Length: 449
Image (tube, rainbow, N blue to C red; front, side, top):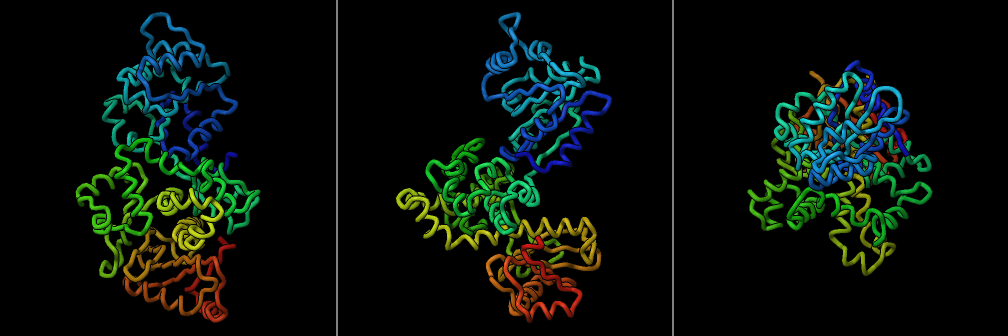
């Protein structure tokens, strides 16, 4: 099921309709929906789709020729011969999609020169999309690899994960809270969404897709990190501790036994692949009570995998999915959901800010990670600040919670001109009445989100 991507489709249509030929480099995580996006765009147009694989140049040419009914004239086929013999069967501008193109560029010096030459021979009549799931290759290696030929590219277009709003559209059989749970487990990756069904409860999906030995997502965590990384034992060790709240360099050093220098190198590789991010507290806040250099696993699914499956796999095998879910996962699940509930709240507040529905027009957005508590979202303009707190676990938010939030803002030395509390649970009558009498407090429940 294809949802969202209106902005991305509009961008592709704009390039396609220009009176010139273009070569676009599109990239993003595997499973983020790049191929679905390209095929949705190309539907009913004059296109050819080719998937490249990691093999020699000769084998690549052989397989792509075979798939497209091409027989080469000599014993040494070339990309020029392949491109010129492609049979576009429709009308209108030609579209050539080459998926996972890094598999060719890594091993061939001929591909890009011959592709550029072919595009130039087509006048204004072709649009080439080079697509890759290797973020690190595209952002750190591709340009230096092809040199001046990179100037022939029309641009680089990164496909980001889908939004929570898209998740709600995708799982139209779920209520809002169930969609929040799914998004907190799987993030904005439609390839992962496909393994869940809104005809089953979220708990049943966790058991069948993530915990069952034959589940589609049982081993996907290891699969994700083995695609581009070596020394999986080191990376898995680091990710294990990050998933279990050891998220500072000193904590990783003391728990893994790896040197700080080694950890820094491996963390850098994980960050280049956008598996891990480094979290800094909001720029204009106090650093006195803030945590410094906090690392975090970006993918909710990878976080779940290393927190539960990787950590307790022996128990999972011996107990089976049902018992493991009840005894191991469920007691910690609300804590897990709360951590990822923040991304949904941030998306919501960012949208309100774009629509001009907040009391300020924020020009900077971030978070503050403190030693005694966090401010989940900080938004500021030139004069005023909004501090937002996201709570998933508490069945009721009370005046005591509100005062605690004020204390955290004080620790951060951020003047809380406006306070927003976003919660799965209800708000106490006392807090609701208190907020009704003030114009700088917003109480937002999950259904509003």
